[in-house]
Image 1 (cartoon, rainbow, N blue to C red):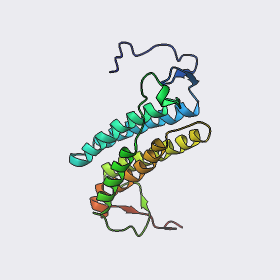
Image 2: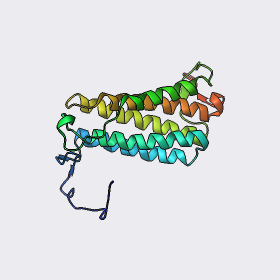
Image 3: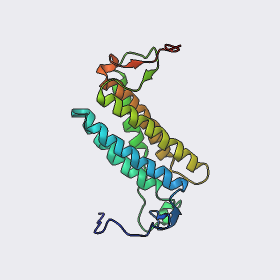
Image 4: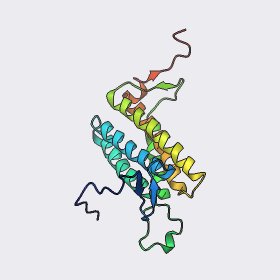
Length: 189
């Protein structure tokens, strides 16, 4: 269990921060950017939940918890998990598979797209589109990190599926796609 008796520690005042394994990195480090953007994504999901109810809110709640798992995974550069004093929290295939199953279930309720969708529509859909774009940024940062350091493959896969999940969920929030705002190429020429 996490116990936070004091919120500020002053340990980051010189521009570095501690990772899960106790090592320190500059706050502009690729690993810190990746898990920091995952935290930002979690906040956008919290905003989306203000407009969600029922099954969508429940699914978003699960995603928020997954995003904390993901942040912990990305904040831990340990590569030999078997040698760690405490097993590190890592994203697993089942979390990715759950998203895929939910995407398939939502997609089965939608007509195929015949145009690209502009972000917008209902308040929930607009917030889910914002979540989608922040998830894509988090994915790009995780992939960039993986180009120079080991990153759990399930972490990257999760972010990739999650942005798809947000896209499909936004269409569901737009009256099952009926209220999607469609792109009209060259409409304002």
